[in-house]
Amino acid sequence: MSTPLSTTDDQLRGEAPPNGELPAGRRGDIAPAEQQGQMTHRQILEALSGMLLAMFVAFLSSTVVSNALPTIITDLRGTQSQYTWVVTATLLASTASTPIWGKLADLFSKKLLIQLSIVIFIVGSMLAGLSQSVETLIAWRVLQGLGLGGLQALVQIAMAAMISPRERGRYSGLLGSVMAVATVGGPLLGGLLVDTSWLGWRWCFYVGVPFGAVALVLLQRTLHLPVIKRDVHIDYLGAAFLTAGVSALLIWVTLAGDSFAWLSTETGLFVGGGVVAIVAFIVTELRAKEPIVPLRLFRDRTTTLAIIASIAIGVAMFGSSVFLGQYLQISRGYSPTAAGLLTIPMVAGLLLSSTVSGILITRTGRWKRFLTVGSLFVVVGFGLLSTVDHETDMVLLGVFLFVLGVGIGMTMQNLVLAVQNTVAATDLGAASSAVAFFRSLGGTIGVSVLGAVLSTRVGDLIRAGLASVPGGAQAAGSGDVGLADFNDAPPAIQTLIRISYGDATGRIFLISALIAVVAMVAIVLIREIALSTQSGEQRLKEEAATSAS
Image: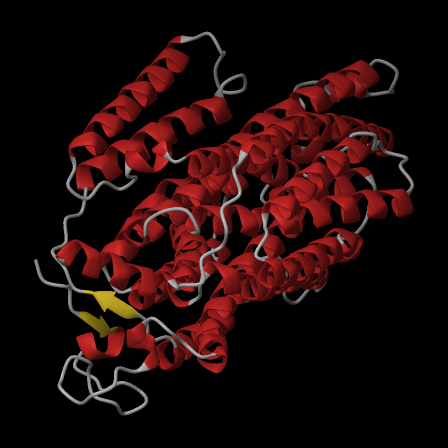
């Protein structure tokens, strides 16, 4: 068995490497750093520039929209359940597509795949901005989610290919910084766009387009990862079963209790179909030559526990943070711009902890202590936030958000690092995307379930308060009155709606805190393994040489 031939993306297209050197393998030639699996600090920073900007586009677009959603839904006369679906649609699409992108990264050019995901995300954003109804907005958010699934998986995979686990900590700090800037900049920018009459909420979808175009150019000029040329076997059947199973179960979780009863024929069809599809997916993966999600990954204790923790973190983080902007705007009456400013403490905590923990991990080679402490901060942060109501002091809220941000900053990226350090180099793409997949899956479940909890609780509080409000009988109905008729409701009922949303939000954070405990337990049980000093490409070449001998 011969060692696979390694080439850069540009050489696959017949182009010369940017440094002018000839391909490796000819007598007397010295392979460029990218082909050796080693890159200098400067080369890494240059390659990261385009990828980090791509991630910035994705996070910016997501945070811009999340802060503008109350305005979007009221303008398009949507409901609370549709509010949830605008978020869920993107998460659902990104969740279902993430493992597919990850597997493709093990088979094709990572660079081209990143560029393709950016294009898909940009097209989806442009079309979403043209939406004239909530239904069409949700449809185009699905397209956005397909691109987002690629970005959140492929950037991590490309970083693993370029940088050793031991060195990845300090560069992960850069990724955390980009997330922080986009997270704080998105709501602020979204607030300014919504509050500017001659722009409006549609520009929340258009604003990421120029950043995406620049990211494409930077990636073309700076990212030159090797591609292992081998026979390609795409598990299309497994991908279809995975998408069908996950989609059916998540759609059921979202619609049950609202569009139809939990115990109903529709529930039986959705749950039965989803379970059958998942079983078919597992059977297919056991037989597939190149499975989308290699089930052997779950034999590794670190990977399995990291995935369990990622699901819990995803449920708690996505499921609660999505409704934070709604709390600040609907309940507390802040403008979109002010709501964005009020999230700065959480972003500051995330930026500080991700940067500092990344540097310390690189310096010491130890990572579990940061994961453990981070998960504890997540539990405490959500526990503190569970006490909020419509009168909570905003200074206290800022402290609570800072604690939560510190915890998230120390857990999200380091869970991926722990898995990448454990699995074989040939499974880096699949394993990295598996963690992102289950985190996104948890987020989708969280948004759906906690959104249903919020809607039910708000509805109960509104109905309880309507009896004492003059004219309340005319506004009676479901909790959807909180968003559908908010602008048209009498002042007394608007006040009732604000109080109901404020008092109901604490319950979401309490559930998130309980779920975060699961993540903390899983992290405590993870066995720490010393960080490797080899990049993914170096490990891949070493594994190939071993199998050839």
